[in-house]
Amino acid sequence: MVNPFTVSLVSWHDGGPLLRLVREAVFIREQGVPEEMEWDEFDATCRHALALSLRGDAIGSGRMLMNGHIGRIAVLPQWRVQKVGTAIMEALLAEARGRHFKQVDVDAQVQAMPFYHGFDFREEGKPFMDAGLPHIRMVKSLLAD
Ligand SMILES: CC(C)(COP(=O)(O)OP(=O)(O)OC[C@H]1O[C@@H](n2cnc3c(N)ncnc32)[C@H](O)[C@@H]1OP(=O)(O)O)[C@@H](O)C(=O)NCCC(=O)NCCS
Image (tube, rainbow, N blue to C red; front, top):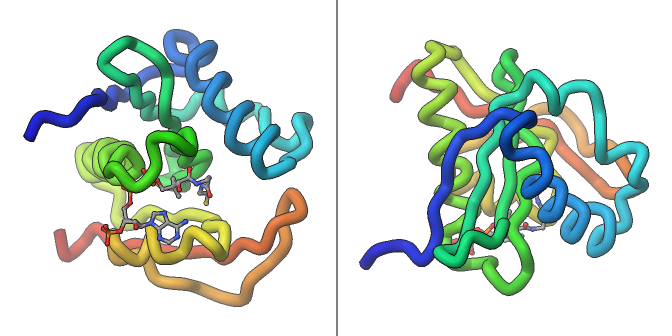
Protein backbone atom coordinates (compact mmCIF):
# COMPACT_ATOMS: atom_id res chain seq x y z
CA MET A 1 0.00 0.00 0.00
CA VAL A 2 1.26 3.48 -0.79
CA ASN A 3 1.86 5.63 2.30
CA PRO A 4 -0.57 8.56 2.71
CA PHE A 5 2.43 10.77 3.45
CA THR A 6 5.92 11.60 2.17
CA VAL A 7 9.19 12.18 4.00
CA SER A 8 12.00 14.30 2.56
CA LEU A 9 15.34 15.51 3.80
CA VAL A 10 15.51 19.30 3.86
CA SER A 11 17.64 22.14 5.16
CA TRP A 12 16.39 24.40 7.95
CA HIS A 13 16.39 27.22 5.41
CA ASP A 14 13.88 25.38 3.22
CA GLY A 15 11.91 23.37 5.77
CA GLY A 16 12.08 25.53 8.88
CA PRO A 17 8.58 27.06 8.80
CA LEU A 18 6.86 23.66 8.42
CA LEU A 19 9.18 21.85 10.84
CA ARG A 20 8.47 24.57 13.40
CA LEU A 21 4.71 23.88 13.22
CA VAL A 22 5.24 20.21 14.17
CA ARG A 23 7.77 20.87 16.93
CA GLU A 24 5.66 23.67 18.42
CA ALA A 25 2.60 21.39 18.52
CA VAL A 26 4.38 18.30 19.91
CA PHE A 27 7.26 19.48 22.07
CA ILE A 28 6.15 22.93 23.23
CA ARG A 29 2.36 22.64 23.49
CA GLU A 30 1.87 18.87 24.10
CA GLN A 31 4.96 18.04 26.14
CA GLY A 32 5.60 21.42 27.78
CA VAL A 33 9.20 21.84 26.63
CA PRO A 34 10.19 25.48 27.25
CA GLU A 35 10.31 27.40 23.97
CA GLU A 36 13.85 28.65 24.62
CA MET A 37 15.06 25.04 24.91
CA GLU A 38 13.35 23.85 21.74
CA TRP A 39 15.20 26.15 19.33
CA ASP A 40 18.98 26.03 19.23
CA GLU A 41 21.93 26.87 17.02
CA PHE A 42 22.11 23.30 15.64
CA ASP A 43 18.95 23.60 13.51
CA ALA A 44 20.77 25.74 10.93
CA THR A 45 23.39 23.05 10.20
CA CYS A 46 21.36 19.85 10.72
CA ARG A 47 19.87 17.65 8.05
CA HIS A 48 16.13 17.65 8.74
CA ALA A 49 13.45 15.10 7.89
CA LEU A 50 10.04 16.60 7.11
CA ALA A 51 6.92 14.45 6.81
CA LEU A 52 4.01 15.88 4.82
CA SER A 53 0.49 14.56 4.34
CA LEU A 54 -0.58 14.17 0.73
CA ARG A 55 -2.44 17.49 1.18
CA GLY A 56 0.89 19.12 1.98
CA ASP A 57 0.36 19.62 5.72
CA ALA A 58 3.41 19.16 7.96
CA ILE A 59 2.85 16.07 10.15
CA GLY A 60 6.31 14.99 11.35
CA SER A 61 9.87 16.13 11.97
CA GLY A 62 13.34 14.86 12.85
CA ARG A 63 16.92 16.04 12.55
CA MET A 64 20.49 14.79 12.56
CA LEU A 65 23.60 16.75 13.47
CA MET A 66 26.68 16.16 11.36
CA ASN A 67 28.16 14.10 14.23
CA GLY A 68 25.35 11.52 13.93
CA HIS A 69 23.26 12.83 16.81
CA ILE A 70 19.57 12.33 15.97
CA GLY A 71 16.80 14.26 17.69
CA ARG A 72 13.55 16.22 17.53
CA ILE A 73 11.63 13.21 16.19
CA ALA A 74 7.98 14.15 16.43
CA VAL A 75 4.73 13.11 14.79
CA LEU A 76 1.41 14.92 15.27
CA PRO A 77 -0.91 12.89 17.57
CA GLN A 78 -3.48 12.09 14.89
CA TRP A 79 -0.74 10.61 12.67
CA ARG A 80 0.95 8.38 15.28
CA VAL A 81 1.34 4.60 15.02
CA GLN A 82 1.00 4.82 11.21
CA LYS A 83 4.74 4.46 10.54
CA VAL A 84 5.42 8.17 9.98
CA GLY A 85 8.08 8.06 12.72
CA THR A 86 9.56 4.95 11.11
CA ALA A 87 9.82 6.71 7.74
CA ILE A 88 11.47 9.73 9.38
CA MET A 89 14.01 7.52 11.16
CA GLU A 90 14.70 5.52 7.97
CA ALA A 91 15.39 8.74 6.05
CA LEU A 92 17.84 9.94 8.72
CA LEU A 93 19.56 6.52 8.93
CA ALA A 94 19.95 6.47 5.13
CA GLU A 95 21.58 9.88 5.35
CA ALA A 96 23.90 8.65 8.14
CA ARG A 97 24.91 5.60 6.08
CA GLY A 98 25.49 7.78 3.02
CA ARG A 99 27.87 9.88 5.10
CA HIS A 100 29.63 6.71 6.34
CA PHE A 101 28.89 7.43 9.99
CA LYS A 102 29.95 4.48 12.17
CA GLN A 103 27.11 5.04 14.63
CA VAL A 104 24.22 7.31 15.44
CA ASP A 105 22.87 8.25 18.84
CA VAL A 106 19.80 9.82 20.35
CA ASP A 107 18.87 11.25 23.74
CA ALA A 108 15.60 9.35 23.86
CA GLN A 109 12.66 10.22 26.04
CA VAL A 110 12.27 7.17 28.27
CA GLN A 111 8.62 6.74 27.19
CA ALA A 112 9.77 6.50 23.55
CA MET A 113 12.45 3.82 24.13
CA PRO A 114 10.39 1.03 22.46
CA PHE A 115 10.29 3.10 19.27
CA TYR A 116 14.12 3.27 19.21
CA HIS A 117 14.50 -0.40 20.19
CA GLY A 118 12.68 -1.16 16.93
CA PHE A 119 15.72 0.25 15.09
CA ASP A 120 18.24 -1.59 17.32
CA PHE A 121 19.24 1.44 19.38
CA ARG A 122 20.64 0.30 22.74
CA GLU A 123 20.70 2.24 26.02
CA GLU A 124 24.00 3.67 27.21
CA GLY A 125 24.45 5.03 30.73
CA LYS A 126 21.84 6.16 33.18
CA PRO A 127 18.60 8.11 32.62
CA PHE A 128 18.81 11.88 33.05
CA MET A 129 16.39 14.81 33.06
CA ASP A 130 16.24 17.24 30.16
CA ALA A 131 13.55 19.87 29.60
CA GLY A 132 11.70 18.36 32.58
CA LEU A 133 11.41 14.91 30.95
CA PRO A 134 13.36 11.68 31.70
CA HIS A 135 15.75 10.80 28.90
CA ILE A 136 18.38 8.15 28.19
CA ARG A 137 21.20 8.10 25.65
CA MET A 138 20.75 5.33 23.07
CA VAL A 139 23.24 4.30 20.40
CA LYS A 140 22.93 2.36 17.16
CA SER A 141 25.97 0.96 15.36
CA LEU A 142 25.90 1.24 11.57
CA LEU A 143 28.96 -0.97 11.06
CA ALA A 144 27.03 -4.23 10.75
CA ASP A 145 24.48 -2.79 8.28
C1 LIG B 1 7.75 8.62 19.25
C2 LIG B 1 7.01 9.00 17.94
C3 LIG B 1 7.88 9.92 17.12
C4 LIG B 1 6.74 7.71 17.16
O1 LIG B 1 6.16 8.06 15.90
P1 LIG B 1 5.08 7.10 15.21
O2 LIG B 1 4.83 7.62 13.84
O3 LIG B 1 3.89 6.97 16.11
O4 LIG B 1 5.87 5.73 15.17
P2 LIG B 1 5.61 4.46 14.21
O5 LIG B 1 4.17 4.39 13.80
O6 LIG B 1 6.60 4.49 13.11
O7 LIG B 1 5.92 3.29 15.24
C5 LIG B 1 6.96 2.33 15.07
C6 LIG B 1 6.88 1.36 16.23
O8 LIG B 1 7.22 2.02 17.46
C7 LIG B 1 6.16 1.88 18.41
N1 LIG B 1 6.06 3.13 19.15
C8 LIG B 1 6.00 4.36 18.64
N2 LIG B 1 5.95 5.29 19.61
C9 LIG B 1 5.96 4.61 20.77
C10 LIG B 1 5.91 5.00 22.14
N3 LIG B 1 5.88 6.29 22.51
N4 LIG B 1 5.92 4.02 23.07
C11 LIG B 1 5.97 2.72 22.72
N5 LIG B 1 6.02 2.28 21.42
C12 LIG B 1 6.01 3.23 20.48
C13 LIG B 1 4.94 1.63 17.57
O9 LIG B 1 3.95 0.96 18.33
C14 LIG B 1 5.48 0.78 16.45
O10 LIG B 1 5.63 -0.55 16.87
P3 LIG B 1 5.46 -1.77 15.82
O11 LIG B 1 6.58 -1.60 14.82
O12 LIG B 1 5.60 -2.97 16.69
O13 LIG B 1 4.12 -1.60 15.19
C15 LIG B 1 5.65 9.67 18.25
O14 LIG B 1 4.91 8.83 19.11
C16 LIG B 1 5.76 11.06 18.87
O15 LIG B 1 5.86 12.05 18.16
N6 LIG B 1 5.70 11.13 20.20
C17 LIG B 1 5.78 12.43 20.90
C18 LIG B 1 7.15 13.06 20.73
C19 LIG B 1 8.23 12.15 21.20
O16 LIG B 1 8.14 11.52 22.26
N7 LIG B 1 9.31 12.10 20.41
C20 LIG B 1 10.46 11.29 20.74
C21 LIG B 1 11.42 12.15 21.45
S1 LIG B 1 12.82 11.21 21.98
